[in-house]
Image 1 (cartoon, rainbow, N blue to C red):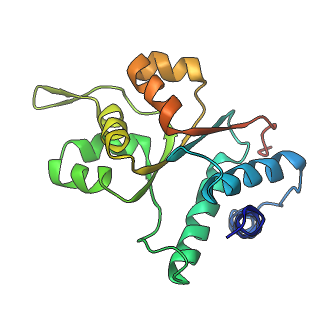
Image 2 (image 1 turned 60 degrees about the vertical axis):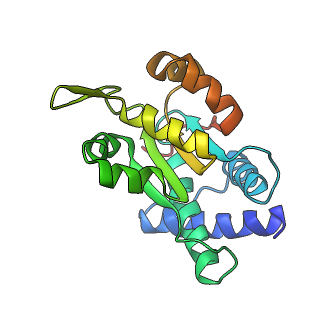
Image 3 (image 1 turned 180 degrees about the horizontal axis):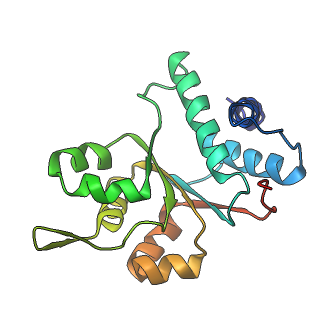
Length: 188
């Protein structure tokens, strides 16, 4: 599949997601650029094994994430992609999964995983006196196995380093292609 074909599929899925949210699609250059960059990455335009979409609130990161999920599921159903689809988990829910080793292992081993709104969750969680670092542990596991990971966040690079440490931030540099959403909020 070419990057243009991928962008066309993502754009159609994005428009459908906007419609599902009962909003009006705004066909602006920034949205098309973000879709194009994601399509280019997905169609082999990068050497990394994940994507981080970051920027201010309300500028389309989550919408594009759900459009990506719909596109991957469509291509999987059409047997273009052999997988079980993209699993999306809210960062705050990762902390709950971490308290159950079996469920956490299933989550962190998913072939395609997206972490929505990374940075909202507590960095540390207590579980019967044990200190867990759920998102950090999840990301390090996926880094070590080079599993495809998508992240959405409102954090800047400096804030990622402060919250998760320089080790995780450094691994992100190797692991993730970063798409910065610079447009203003679509929310009124």
